[in-house]
Amino acid sequence: MLLKFNLSVESPGRQEQQFSFLIDTERQSFQPDSEGKISFANTSVVIAQPRPTLSFQHLVGEAISEKSKQGHVRTAETYKSALNSFNRFVHGRAVALNEVTSSLMTDYENYLKQKGVCMNSISFYMRILKAIYRRAINRHLVDDCMPFKNVYTGVAKTTKRAVGIDVIRKIKSLEPLDEKERLARDMFLFSFYTRGMSFIDMAYLKKKDLKDGFLYYTRKKTGQNLCIKWGPHMQNIVDSYPSCNDTYLLPIIHDDGSDGRNQYKYRLCVINKSLNAMARRLSLSCNLTMYVARHSWASIARSIDIPLSIISDAMGHTSEKMTTIYLKSIDQSRIHNENDRLINLIHQD
Image 1 (tube, one colour):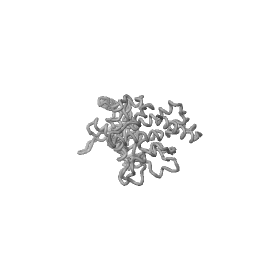
Image 2: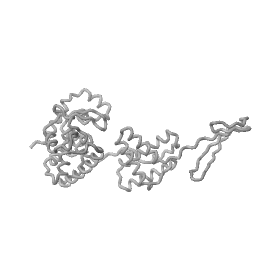
Image 3: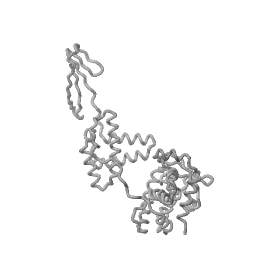
Image 4: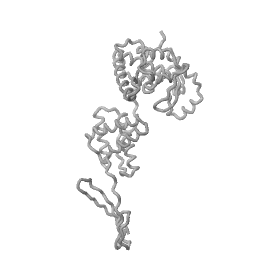
């Protein structure tokens, strides 16, 4: 017959530890062994190893270090953002794994709402923390009490982030007030001209990527190789900014010897700030960011009946399996021609 007992042991300077005892009343010997089992007349006592007392934040920190070592810099940054938000909520207090309950996460969600955080950002934080919690379960560090069952982890529809062809023309014609606005306008247009190229991909473009009238680059997000037909409007922008070094094509990363990612993030912040100032001058009803250029290219391309399959391939989308399969047979010249057609719309008198 097996009997189970629980024992709490607290020693000075250490947290309380839980031990489980299994007593086998049919055992007829008295003999300790190396596995923590003590046997004596009619009984056998097994002392289970206590679970490590790790904080929830410690596990998030482990994941951040792991992602950084694997080269997933952007993922590590998003984990760090979630950790910082959660730490602000608990005022920096270390939260034990068994304290991560449905009540705690519901309170965290309400805290974010009160701070004016949008639902998609709330879901973003919750999904990251949920992934960390699942890892703790898989490592047998905590029993699953389903702490995320009552919080939002979905994806809400976002406000449209595209502008029409008329707005793109206004941006092109706008006389910048200073060098910051000029750079912001030109980088916005360069993204549009290059089929909505994301800013991080623009930042890391190198002079050697421009060959024989084509620009070749690999998307940071997906690793997909893309090719863009080079045109005079793109060249005019590049010519407007004398190179600060011998490596990069655009004036985003200046010092090749320091942390390029920090330079890219700083430049993006400055450019988006200038774009929003331009939006106010143009009396636009929406915010203007570099991401708007990407959305606008896709939206305007669709409005002039460029096939969805060509748009997807041109932008390097890989998330739709059927689209990806179909795109393998698309003639690249059609993509280049459709992009030329779209750019010409912007420059029509």
